[in-house]
Amino acid sequence: MNPFLELACDAARQAGALLRDHYESDLNVNEMLDHDIKLELDVRSQDLITRRILDTYPDHAIYGEEGIAGNPDSTIEWIVDPIDGTVNYFYGIPHFCVSIAMREAGQLKVGAIYDPMLDEMFAVEAGGTPTRNGKPITTSPRSQLKDAVVTIGFSKSKEAMDAGMDRYRAVAYQVRKTRMMGSAALALAYIACGRLDAYIEEQISLWDIAAGQLLVEAAGGSIRLSDSVSHPDKWGIVAHNGKLPLDDI
Image (cartoon, rainbow, N blue to C red; front, side, top):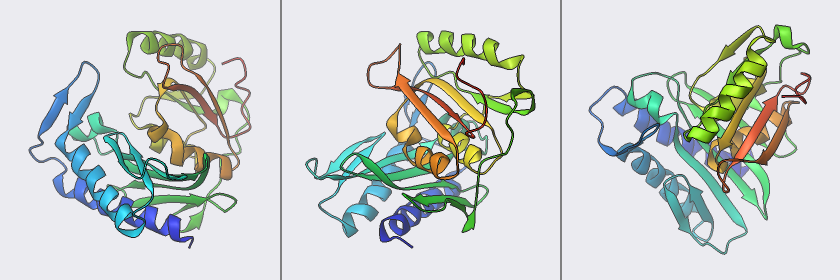
């Protein structure tokens, strides 16, 4: 295995074990927001990942949801979401993950998404075959919206929620089912392995999608990012299996 990918998977597993050990326990809340929650465990998970990476590559950079670390001038940057699906985690909904990607000179090189509750590791390196627990995966063959299962994200701001509602109305009558699942990284992993057919959200951060973007594209899918209309540092995303006619959406 690529040593960078091996490190990403190892760090994700260690962080996932931490999350699993504290699942449905008393959790310390750092910040309770209108549509989000920040846990002490978010910080602990990212600190664990940061130590694991910088112990191996002390001159690399860490860019995570809970802050930056390492050498900010490094051309190699690790992109970390220590708990993707924090609200699910806090409420005891077993749908969350750890997401770690690495990019070099702006190009994504490896990605790992680990679901500690199902013990599923989604892993990929640029130019390689994406896998789930070591077995190759590919996107679904579905090419018609009427057969598709699509997940819609509603983000956190009023503007993003309004945009999500508009897209939901545009999609819901055309597809077999819609789902709102609460983890962008797992949504992309599920597209990569054929469980879902598309994921659409107006406002998303780099750490939510970096590993998943590499997975989806390697599995035969398509990712389209656009500038968010509601936040200058985020993107809108349309991800799908590479076969659905989603241009109008």
